[in-house]
Image 1 (spheres, rainbow, N blue to C red):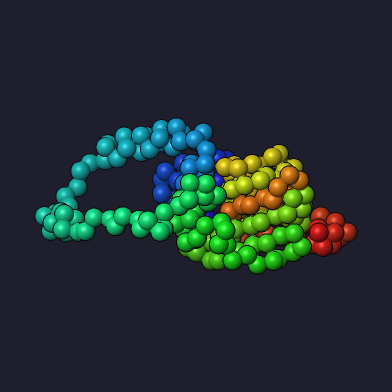
Image 2: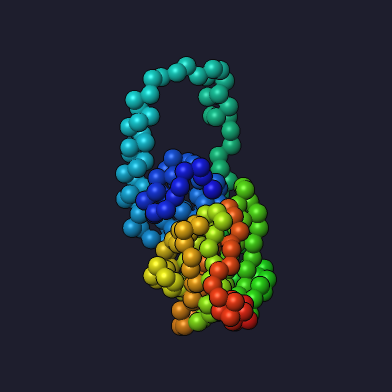
Length: 214
């Protein structure tokens, strides 16, 4: 996903501010910041540090400055969002996610992958982007990762060996994480995931078969 290792939320926010994340991961972080204000102050602080660093960089002349300014002033203003496309007040998807995939939660073209598990996936900017629906109480097969995986919980929650992940939380997993996410029993877990490598199933053969069957 990026050349440097990301293993904490703080590191993820730093890469977001630096602009080093692929667009799907940036949309995931923007969605997280829409859902939870906890990290907005951290991002604002990092952006201020970045601005201070830019101010210390020596000025450089811009070629064709007048022509570039003329082109900017001559460009049309952004079009207002049509009334028909405005998001419902109680929309499940954050705006950044909706803008990325082009639809709201009720319009996801789900595909059944396993009993009690549905997914919609696509490749984008070198990443696999997926939306996941997990039946209440459903355990996903134990697995680790060959790359990096970011999961943003949109509704419901899951628990694994690391703890609980609820709405707005981000799970960061790589080859050092071997886990078996289990959706909580009160409602489905709906999540948005961005990864740059496939998963690798782990656990005993008996457990694997049981989890695949559901």
